[in-house]
Length: 395
Ligand SMILES: Cc1cc2nc3c(=O)[nH]c(=O)nc-3n(C[C@H](O)[C@H](O)[C@H](O)COP(=O)(O)OP(=O)(O)OC[C@H]3O[C@@H](n4cnc5c(N)ncnc54)[C@H](O)[C@@H]3O)c2cc1C
Image (tube, rainbow, N blue to C red; front, top):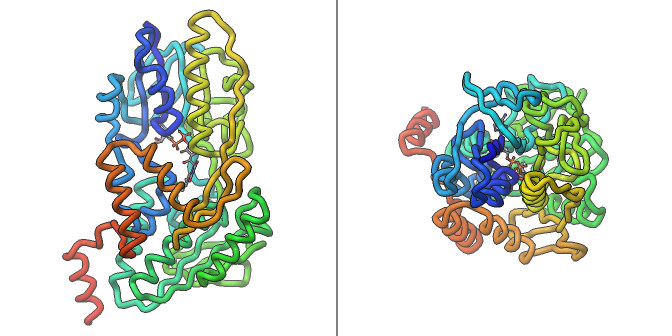
């Protein structure tokens, strides 16, 4: 039996497991730095308090048990591709085949000290932290909440509209600014999508600043040279880069994603595959991550049969930016999408790939109650915390 090790239990990692778990020729071990799986496309909803974090979280131990594979929680400290060994938690794991599917994380582009003052939308912990701190502000006697979001990509735009909706529903005023260094938001997307998004933001009273380079962030403001934007909440969503696992390979892109050949192999290695966002070939997307996984799994089976896999080619089925107010803008294949259909389609697709029937059901009821009754499903801050706040406010 061959040892297959998969590092990263996101869409790509799970995809490889799903393809090969019934194949008796492989013993599979999955490694993740977390002991749970989280669902990234719904991070903006959690951050804004529209969804309870538990809905998008699934225990990895339970996942591994149901798939009859081994699971190790921890960060890989090194990979020796000559001896085919991984070092983790002070022990060694040998592999015959290795799939790296560690995704990406927020890039601070050399301004790492900004991390201290800014929330990111790249991990469940960070989204929970933002949700909690936003709720503290919502239940305080502050009349207006100032939010600065740095980065006008889809994460920044979705988060801006969701947070605005939450603040408005709590009958507070808001002052939300999206700050983009380039000349347009949603750079790389078609112009009609950019224009519709800008109009939507303007109508929602969200300010958009373009050609605006951030020079400093403090606990209370974002600095754009001499211009100072006061902020109660600062969110950094200005780009992504590969994770620390990328540093075990020699050829990386500017954003630390791992360079691969047409067979998804890095550094000319025959038995190592890079799948999902960690790889440099395509844009970051769930359907593409799943295609990487299918390809890596079928290549491993072919290599076992001494056959040569064909080169990898992924299909891009499009994307939808889910804005609050029940609007999804994007394209499906070549078809432009704008409106309620796009919004519902986004959440339907999320529901399909969410793990656990209970989570799927809770997502459905949360989205419906959000649409019909205007309710957020995240639990308000605990009563004790609220009382403390009220005490502070009454002083
Ligand atoms: C806010 C946001 C919204 C998005 N919305 C959409 C959307 O609407 N539609 C869409 O198609 N795509 C969307 N994406 C992109 C999509 O989530 C990614 O393309 C997809 O998650 C990639 O899957 P992956 O398996 O490559 O990586 P991930 O899903 O990121 O999984 C990586 C896994 O590796 C683990 N890991 C990381 N580093 C290590 C390490 N050092 N050691 C061990 N384990 C590690 C992580 O814990 C994680 O479990 C969104 C992304 C974000 C951030």
